[in-house]
Picture 1 (cartoon, rainbow, N blue to C red):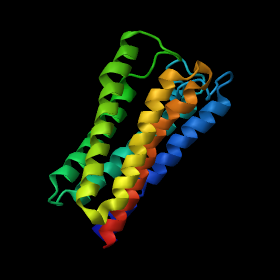
Picture 2: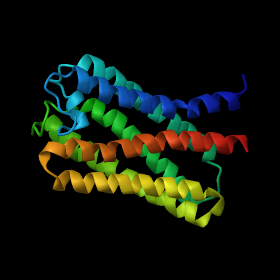
Picture 3: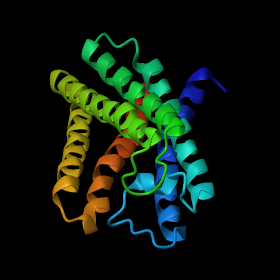
Picture 4: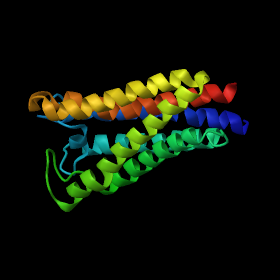
Length: 209
């Protein structure tokens, strides 16, 4: 098996990451007695007091590993592209996944809801805020790159859609009634997960050209 074939397999890790993330959300929601996905955040499923932690934690860990793997491969494949904007985009998105993987692993929520222990404060301010900012920065760079390079127009539109979903989720989750908070919060989380899977497929396509 050639190294290029190995890279192609690694680039499909984004799809496995999406499946793992979706399973941790769906299975966790089904098995967590009293949990309401419409009104509660995804992070509640991996909180330290979550009764389904033995199910959600391994799946969340698998998602993190797959995301870092696919983004590391994307960076390796596209690193020689002369565009500085593209480099900013791929390194920014890789950095986001590294912070997310390591940070959320070190600082999970102590319990469901909005607790305020040291771990919870770190979860929000040391992990979530940098993750959101890096995601926005990287997606904007992807959009700018796609605008400059017409052969990458599809990348521009998908990145734009992901950014729109992220903003809609962030804004509406703070404006809507708490009974539907979880629905709009998932707009933001799934936008990054789905874009990562797409980016792996997109890069795999470029690898075959």
